[in-house]
Amino acid sequence: MPLGGSFATLSVGVFEAAQMHTTLIMVHGFAGNGRDFDAVAGPLARAGYRVLCPDMPGRGRSVWFDNPAHYRFSTHGRALVALINRFADRPVILAGIGWGGVIIALTFTMATLPMVKGVVLCGVPLSWHLGEDEELVEAARDAGLRFSTQAAGIDHVLAGCRFRGADPGHAVNLAKGRLIADGEGWKPAFDPALVLGKEQAGNRVYDITQVLPAITAPTQVISLRRDGYPAAGPEAMVADSPSAFLFTRPDEQRMLMTALDRLSDAATPAQATSG
Image 1 (cartoon, helix red, strand yellow):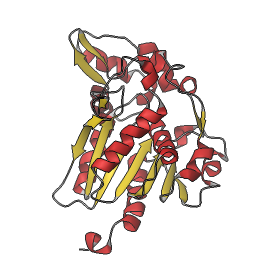
Image 2 (cartoon, helix red, strand yellow):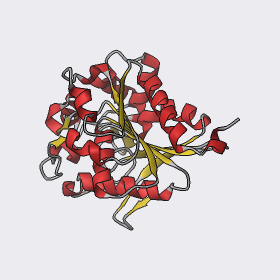
Image 3 (cartoon, helix red, strand yellow):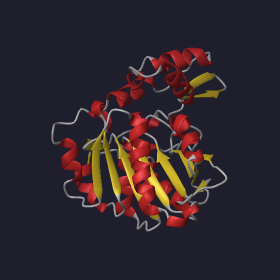
């Protein structure tokens, strides 16, 4: 879909079923893309969600800017607002993983979003900066890599921190989504300028505890064991946000479904959920 006229294009995976009660927009982590949600998007669609999985700018098949200065949080926020407005014919829920949750929270500081009826923030750090996340350090190290075969690229991706302890079958499919083909073989589906030009790109430190209260929709904050929070970390996130609810469970997919069920019950008219 176009973003800001001819400014950019956004690639969006769309999963739909015959009966849809809610639009669910899922925003990936910094080094990921919309393919990260392939395993959950189908089941969510069958559960009545129209699931939208965008590649945010600089990832996957969306625009890769020639000028790294365009990779600002405001650009990602504009992309998210454009997507919300395009598919706002049903109640909207936003779900973000890690950096994707940061984008969602910051977007509420940029725009009024009355069509958004719920937010899920999963594994969102208390503060965010490029140099403080192991996965992002790996992304910077891998910037510009090329692989002669897809299999070689998958092996490299699977050796990264993101896939430690992951189910092998799921991990392989997820790794495939982290690669794209070009004329020279296969490469990470991630613009090197996102990390190599980080100062120009405006990726400064953000304190999420200061941004969370700006979210006007009911919010589910999911804390994962691997987040490495201090003991009071997740509690600090929701302390000043009366609309937020915090819960901690070890199963990421089950947590996501539980959070969506809570929000859908509140966002969906009774007649759309009966039966």
